[in-house]
Amino acid sequence: QVQLVESGGGLVQPGGSLRLSCAASGSIFSIYSMGWYRQAPGQLRELVADMTNGGSTNYADSVKDRFFISRDKAKNTVYLQMNSLKPEDTAAYYCTAHGVLTTAMVTEGHDYWGLGTQVTVSS
Image 1 (cartoon, helix red, strand yellow):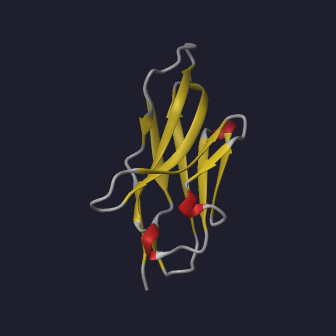
Image 2: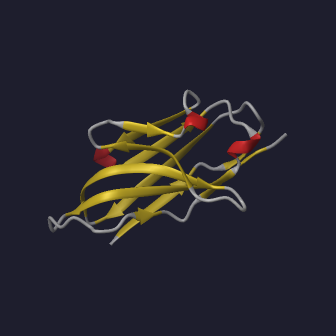
């Protein structure tokens, strides 16, 4: 089993910054891709950013040049540095892990998700 635990959410004023962290634990040998999704009330969950273990990144247009994703592969941890936050960034942010290879050398057939951390941007 694999667990993802997010941290770092909170209340911030427009223009401020937050850094989210997500640590994966369990019988993990490697993770192909880790990333962040978000879901605002009444909205669909959307991709914010993800990063492969090779360093390739993918960002939503709405966060490009403001949000930056990074990974510590040795710690199975992914980070999301969020700058110049806007009220429309308010959402629950979820960490995800895709392509988990277990210590038994089995590639999991499904993605793993964290429980989410709330980010609220408001004055």
